[in-house]
Image 1 (cartoon, one colour):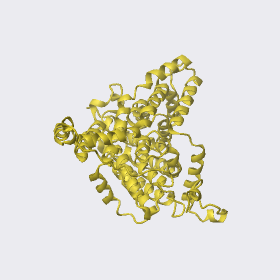
Image 2 (cartoon, rainbow, N blue to C red; image 1 turned 90 degrees about the vertical axis):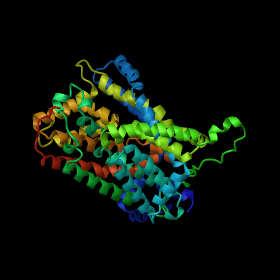
Image 3 (cartoon, helix red, strand yellow; image 1 turned 180 degrees about the horizontal axis):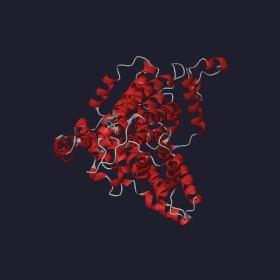
Image 4 (cartoon, rainbow, N blue to C red; image 1 turned 180 degrees about the vertical axis):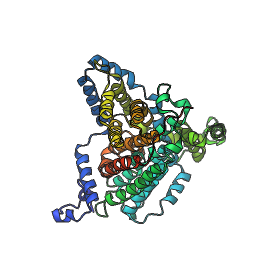
Length: 488
């Protein structure tokens, strides 16, 4: 089938309504939304720029002056620089590790299981959501590498866009319910809880958040649902578009290196420096894991990135091989570097630009939710609020610090289990990730896709996840009894 016949909606060219009706509903929905996105969905940079303008206008609508909004913009623009660097390194190190011969062999072995294109997409989805419970960044990187390797198997007839969306599912379904949950980690560690928040929430251990049986149940439901929807939305053979159809080059093997020609290049082609640096780095990693709880040590993004850098050094063996891989990897981080500062500005305007009453946009939203919530409706309404705010402030830990004082105070007043409120936040705030390109950027860089390629498939996940998550949050809230804040 020609590329032209696979373009547009992804349906067979020249097929009539009857032929289209024979396509399963979720697949047809994903293909139609994808076709719409290919025509109308802007680049991720344009998306965040438009969001910034909307938030700025919203701040002025509640009475903030243009000067206040501009100041908030400037002060927030660089607020995510440490996180921006961390995310850029996630993309770069993921590419560096992927381009090494040993990792290529490992991922190739992991890609041998699927026998069909749809099965391959579901397989990637399952791996993504399961690995995200351990670490969200590892999920993004490994699932992206796995999807790329599966795409090389032409006999699978796998849709590369659907595989990319499946690789991303850990960030939109389960990551916040796992051990790398920012909110759960913050509440479990007395040293990380702000002094103003401590009297409201107290210390909430993992046993009262991510390890509640209610939380485990939601996780199992989402793992199953994500995998099934990924399978049902994956285009069948004849409608699937491969990486080749999309004009994407999958070969990322390092170019052959020239021989050493001068004495000064000896160290570049020797593993001596690599082994010395790796030894130093492993000493620090050992220190982290022996002086901190394992769940805390493994969740740190700095630790994750350092381990991947060391792994990349070892897998490429010589400094010259490693540097060549880094040079080729840097472009995959371009979207992260230029777009994350804009998200920092959005968060600043939401939380710093206040109207005459001293309230910001986030205050107005939270006050509205708290004012209409009751004991029975609290979980449902808080879930909606967290999801809406998560669309504009896609930062698990930072957004929790914005929301926690209001929602946890209301939870105390309404006698809601405080650990469950954390899980309401975790489950709901991940939902907008399915349609917001913020967290997609590292994966898009690794897979050489655009957000519009993924959103049609992730939108179908969003439509199925949202009612299920909100219902479970509401239904399971009644199985938990309120416990007053526990002070350290």
